Image 1 (cartoon, rainbow, N blue to C red):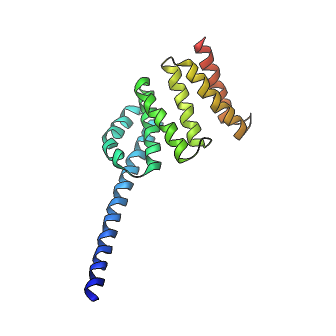
Image 2 (image 1 turned 135 degrees about the horizontal axis):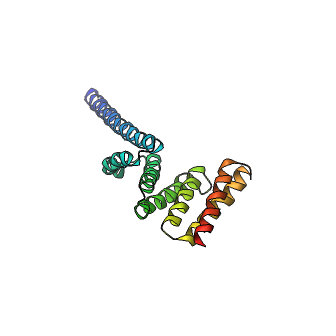
Image 3 (image 1 turned 180 degrees about the vertical axis):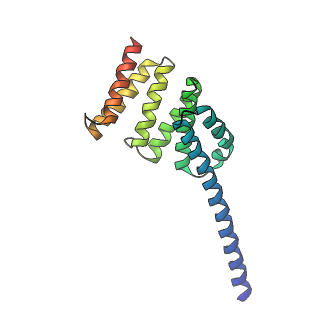
Length: 167
């Protein structure tokens, strides 16, 4: 019995050590994603893109779904800020899908991703999709926040600009 207990104890310790390594890797990855977010906010999308590109292989293997949502949204933002709208659009679309799956269709993360997607649709000349997506976001923000909320007013402004650009 002692041998069995000792073997199980060693397996448990090994499992804890493996869990600790996984947790450390997840924290390091999360730290890199947070740095990229701060760089985008600071107006340094090129530096953010460098970090996001470097961590991409690890992100692809990560089991941290919430981090994946942030990652694809940040990739979209960095590429969009650099004027690489066609490259940014697949990341924005993935952020929308992940947001729907992870948080739900009316969650602020999902609607924020849709808002970015609408702007990218307009940037690449896909105005019908841009109008439909921005209109959906505006309707959701109006229902959730009311007419006087900053999110609703910003969505109204973006939709107005998209309609004006579409002609």
